[in-house]
Length: 143
Image (cartoon, rainbow, N blue to C red; front, side, top):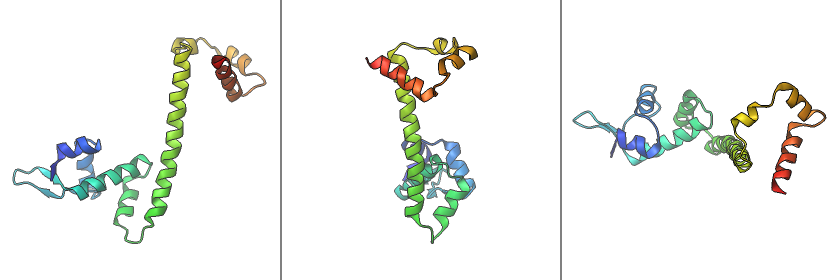
């Protein structure tokens, strides 16, 4: 059995999150010690990890509760939906990392970006999409 502090460290949630999950009936402590400490067993910690995956996939707490409480839920379908959302987030995050690495490699900072006014942007992208412009910039940087 692990105390709430340990569970928070393991799963990466706050004490308040666990208190809210308890309040809405999403996850209760496995038991309480004689001193009043909330204790969680391995099964509860595993359930908390699954809850967090669904939450990070965009599910509302009420939706997660329905999934967990329903004996008829198609978990494979729900897992596939969550995987799809997380894969899309992963692509966006990887794209952001790549963008920052490219900007870093040419020493472009926020002040460089801010120097473009609306006229400059319109001229820069006239007759071409941002994606084409971006790809051209990347091509020039790799030469």
